[in-house]
Image (cartoon, rainbow, N blue to C red; front, side, top):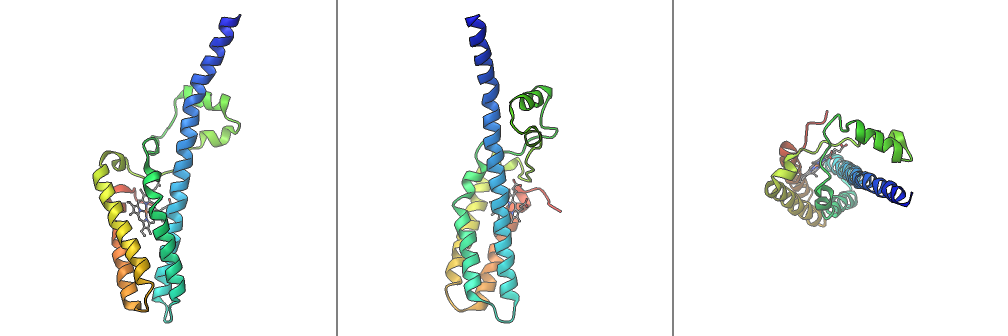
Length: 176
Ligand code: HEC
């Protein structure tokens, strides 16, 4: 009796462990997508502002700071294990396991959608370079927005945009 009780506990532990890891990865992916959406919104706000006839420099500054603030988080968004899952993501065993152990069966079977390419994890040096270029231009954008030179801000925004595009071209699937 005691031996079989132990076995049941041990089995439950072994089965539950990967579920925890998966949930953690899902959370990282959710943060990542939400973060990039914020970056996208701030970028759009800056574009709209700098296109207007009387741009609000305060708005450019605050949006530039949002983007620059996110640069510190980006490395943590792409840790090992946060790769997008292959679809269909789960075999019968994983599905059954989630169904048995998840308090919310629907959420567990519905994977978070990611458009990150696997190359991020296989060509890390190149990805890091794309990240560093972006960080540099995002920081320069903050500095440029401290001044009053709208033309310089527009130019810097274009430079920043190039770094977004450079990374997306190689490391993000097309989103339409
Ligand atoms: C170092 C690489 C990198 C840089 C630089 C980068 N991105 Fe991204 N971006 C990604 C990846 C990878 C994804 C996909 C994330 C996912 O779906 O898991 C993404 C996703 C997005 C999304 C879509 C989020 C969604 O709704 O799914 C937006 C919007 C976005 N990025 C905007 C920007 C903007 C604007 C910039 C520049 C100011 C930028 N990104 C810079 C890699 C980058």
